[in-house]
Every structure is written in structure tokens, then in C-alpha cells.
Length: 399
Image (cartoon, rainbow, N blue to C red):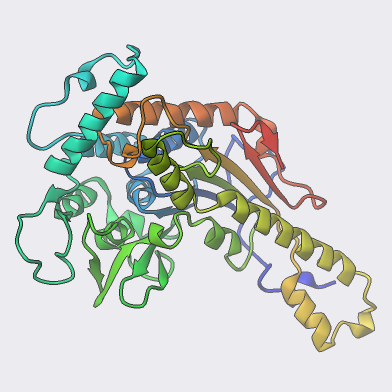
């Protein structure tokens, strides 16, 4: 069967991705890094990227929402060997308070554990400072003046972030889609429609990444070409489905890095209720998406096999050609990494930008990706019998 001609949505001419970390017989054409939103927890994603870089696994597609979009800008805007260093510069920059001296526990050795009640109190203090002072190179409180327009209707001014992004990311490099594809999501304020900004379709500027992280009412809508945009996490906090649904479909290895866990315990007090609410709201049902995509790809593979049984004389029929447009033999492998809550964290964990917390989040991401890559068999191509597989180091399960 001339399957590629019949199904251009499945056809892909791209050569296999090259990396010594992957099995020599792999056929992955896309290695994607998909970064969920989650504010201060985004340092976990930076740790994951460091581990990928150590393994010489440099993605050729990075997609992000909110803080994931900001990490994506730093990654795509620098050469591979400098990305982890620039991510560290970014996180050290934005984890400093702009006014008062650092909170004492930020200066303690990271190995010095604190009792959870004390850690919780100090985390709350750091979050309170972020609300009062803002964060260096990221956002600052607005004067209590009436807003002039839609771009100033917020509690904080994010103009410092534009300077930080333009200092730490080369936007000419970032817009070279031949080296790395970049996609970030935002929401059009007027229409309520979700929008993906992609360097294969337009030139991306700092404003596109700021728009992806413009969560109201804290942060202002960001104007892009006459329209205003808010944080993409208001609609969907992970860009996984667009990456998996992209046409033409290609054999893909996807590292999905989540900052919120859909699974958790029944909360026993109001503070834990607020924490659990955020986890559920912003997890964006990643597992539901992977389950749906797995089932869909299995049906596409089954349809292709059934089409092999159709006599050659009948393959010109409209029904056959319609079926060919749905069938596909592409293979997908999703490696799932999910941030795990630490003792003493509260519902403010996404705006607790303290330096110690940043280092702990980073170390967690690095440890999780190293543990994941300690299973080299997880990087193998799925089989035609199981065209869509997922792996999760915390569940110790593959599906």
C-alpha cells in the first residue's frame, strides 16, 4: 500500500534524531520537551533540562505554558552547551528579592534539613515577601493608581521580565526553527480562544513568552499585534496534546515535565484544601490526555492494518481514501516527570521564589531525570503492537 501518499498527515520526511543516548536503531524524528506552568516550581524543569543535557539529549522541539514558556525561551535562546548555565542565571536572578536582604534560611546549607513546621513558616514568609516586594528581574508592585489601559490592569508590573529575557536569550537563535521548534500557549483576552505562538509560523519576541505567563489579576495582559493575551494555563496548563497531535505525525519521544500532580490525598484542613485545589486545577489532566492519545493511536494503527486487507482494485474509493487520512503507523513514547511536594509546602508554593526553594526544586528535577535515564530501555522505540507508551519514574510503571 502506498501509505505515505494516501496519508500525508502521517507522512514525515525528517531524518531520525541523532543522540548517543538513544538506541542505535531508534527512528525518533522528534524529541520534545513539554513544560507545564507552575510559577516558582519551574526550577524543577530547569533541573530536568540539566539532566537531559548531561545525557546529550537536546530536544529539537520545546513547548511551554507560563513558567514553562519562560524556561523554553532560555533553552531555545542559547546554544546547547550554555543552556543549563543560562537557566541557572535566570533562576538565580528571579529568586532574589529586590529590596530587603535575603531571608536567613536561604543562606543555610541545602543539606541542613529544617523541621517541617519551621520550613512551612519560612516558606510562608518567602511567599509573603514575593507579594509585597515582587521578584528581582521578574515583577514589581504597581503604584496604587488607576490603570491606564488593559496592559496596566494588574497588581504587578512585569516589564523587568522583558529585560531579563532579552538579556539571557538570543531571539535570533530562538527563531531558528531548523535548530529547535518553539511553541508557547496563551489566551486571547477578548475572544477567550487559546493561541499557540510557534516559531515555524511567526517570529517570537519576549512578549510572546510574557503573554504565556501573564496570570491575572497579578500580571497584566500582554499586547501582541493589537490583541491582548493572558496566561495559557487559564485554559490548558500543558501543551502536550498539540505536540502529540501535530501533522504530519512523526515518530516522537516526549519528555513531559509537570509541576502539579492530579493525584493526591484528601485534604484535612483549609490550607491543604487550597493546595489540593491548585494541584487539580493546574495539572490539566495530563494522564487523561496520554490515555486518550494512546487509544487514538492504537485505533489508527489498527485501521492501517485493516486497510492492508482491502483489494488493490478498491483502494481508489472515497471511503478508502478517507480511511487512509485517519490511519497512521507513527510511534510515540512519553516520558512523564511530575514534581513531588516537599514537607512544609503550602498553597503558595507556586509563588514562593526563595533561593533555597529554587535550589531544592532544581535538585529534585535533576534527581528525577537521572533516575528516569537509569532505565535506558524506556528510551526504546515502541512496538507496532503498542504504538503509544508512557513511563513514569514515580509510579514505577509503564503503560
